[in-house]
Amino acid sequence: MDLRIVSAPQDFAALRPAWDRLHRRCAQRSLFLSHAWLDAAWHWQSPSAALYIVCCEREGELVGALPLVRADGRSLGFIAVPDTQQCDVLVAEDHAVAVVDALADELSRRRGDWDALRLRYLRGDAIAVRMLGAALTRHGANVHVRSVTTNPLVALDAPWEAYYGSRSRRLKKAANLAANRLTKAGVVDIHWLAPGKGDRAEVDRELDHVIRVSARSWKRQTGNSLDQAGPQAFIRRLSHHAHDRGWLSIWRLSLDGVPIAMEYQLIGDGNVYALRSDFDVDHESLSPGSHLSRHLLQTLFAQGLRRYSMGPGDNAYKRRWADDAEPVLTLTAYAGSLRGRALAAWELALKPAARRVRERLRPRPPTAAKDHGEDPTDSDRGVT
Image (cartoon, rainbow, N blue to C red; front, side, top):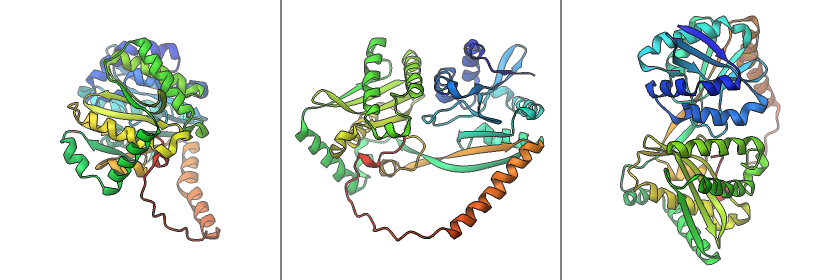
């Protein structure tokens, strides 16, 4: 096995053909591991991070890769953005053990480059969880895996009527109220740019609508709304890649011709990944996001798809629609170096102890009154 670190953006771009071949050979393929997705994510991260992609080659062919960046000092992490739903090591199925061992060997050999490896957005069956963590432990790293949130899911392979009939009375009442409010407010139009549809010009027009809605959403306060430089570079580049590959799915709800809610999705391998759900806060009382969610879900049930992934985050509105959820894990490996051991001691022992002391000394706030509201409006919608 030959190992090398790719750190120049032009070298990562040149890897695309080899990366695509490796991606097709992965036992657990995911569009979030494709060169297209990672290239778009890198365009968001690039101003504040440096590429550190560990490549494993055998007889000149790429058989494994760990898509990392150095984002803050001496920590390494995945090429990822807040819209990432899953990430992992890329490993050719027929070389899994040898590749993982080689990647762990290389990271250990280069432990002077890093103190902590923080791998987020991992599924429970991720190769990083099942294999890489153990391989790093054998090299003296201090490895910890923890569950940080869940990714709520809706199975799409049952009849819509049976699924919707199983939803709570509260949700159905709220859906009817939202439909009535919008109808009274003006002319409602829902448009779907489905995978494989439209040309580049139409994609760009829909993106302009999506970005405008995001700019008027509550996410504007977070710095992650799509009108910001990094997120916009990401979403435009991703959309062009996704349209070329038949993944792009954009939903838009307009009132009297003005877009006020949207959902941005990718659809691949029978799965729907909801990346962004935003609405114009000036129309929050009409619950346009809730109405759009109900409509798009009903439509997706008729498309022969497997499941709808709502994105990491335990939000109230997701729980009302979802029947299941996958855990989302983070693996942290502290290097066996002196600096790595010191960081592990601080983060795993000293810092939690200090936090417990502060909690004991902090005055307890008065008990809040219980919310008995029955109308789950768009204000429930989380960071999706």
